[in-house]
Amino acid sequence: MKIVRYADPGPVSKYRDYKPYLQPLFRSRCAYCISHEEVMGGYDAMEVDHFRPWSRPEFKHLEKEWGNLYYTCRLCNGSKSNHWPTTEQDARGLRFVDPCEDDPDDHVRISRHPNTGDFCWLRALTPAGRYTIDKIRLNRKQLIDIRRALAREESEVREAFNRNRQRIELLTKDLDARGATPEVEDVLRSLREEQERVSRQLEDLRSHRPFQSDETAA
Ligand SMILES: [Zn+2]
Image (tube, rainbow, N blue to C red; front, top):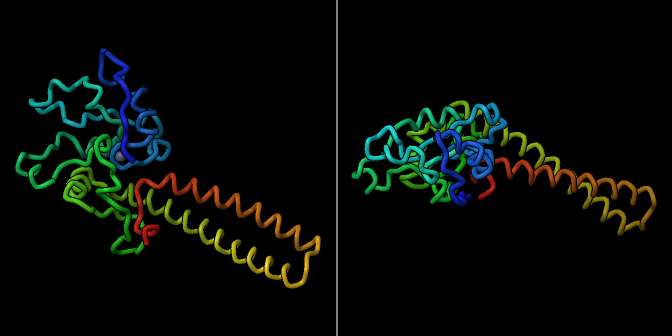
């Protein structure tokens, strides 16, 4: 999902003063690994990144520029550091995926881990995706573990959903064949309520997933 920036709430005296405005704009998630702040140590553990690194002379003037400030986790900010593509790299599409200009899902996707087979490995769909994964270390252990835990939880809930659906189908057939009894209707009603709950849980888990996954694309 692309971030649509609203008007500059500044001016501010220090660039970090923008942090409370950046948090809701980036939906409390890191701009690069898209992890929610609650799994990264909360608001206080999050940082303000300069998309164009202001430590580079050519971007020095962007230190307090609202449009250049991004909400990030500490490790993504640290890995990104002052990396910036050369003109030659940029011409080959090797650049940072910009969540305010691009939809990250067009550039990277969660796929099977080459060793464990879990859906937690980020693969590049474009040169920009490759550059971003490499420079920001988007396949570091911390992120693999977060994505793996989310994928496993989602898979368990999906299995519960499928089991429930089968039971509902069987009971409905039974009811059609033998006629309704209050007992069967009761069981069916509670199963359907349970199914609604599981379905909401599944949607909630999918909304927490940082990127699109090959698992659901398949
Ligand atoms: Zn991050």
